[in-house]
Image 1 (cartoon, rainbow, N blue to C red):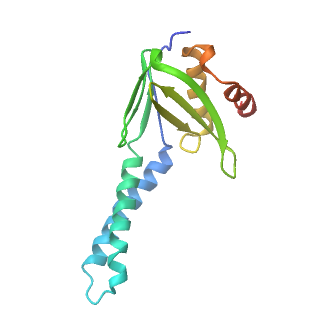
Image 2 (tube, rainbow, N blue to C red):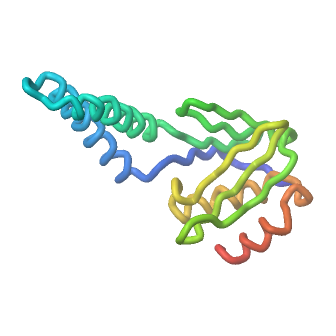
Image 3 (cartoon, one colour):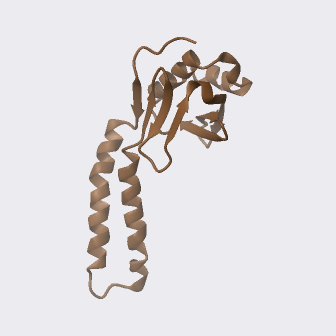
Length: 154
């Protein structure tokens, strides 16, 4: 197990954050605009909470961060926060899902798990995350499935 020289932070791409910061408030304004309309059909009233939920989700999405340091792994910014010490990890697995065979890496610790989806991170960032995991975690924690998929996506 090697040392990680500096703490590294991974988040969604900058262009996606800009889109969320632009369209989130726009959707909120649209929702409130629908509420103040007169003679509005009752069906539209049910659309407003959905619009507000989408806008809040977009703004929360921009706050998600994965921080990998020499002592632990932290996933912050969302409703479910994770802080994993390297010694707490009991297994690391990977699977391919969806039409485009997107890899998802799962870290098991205690009775919980953290899924790292390449759909959220860019390909280069995802490969860097996997490299840091391989650098710091014990080799026996990685499953055969993980190793096979890792060879495919590298």
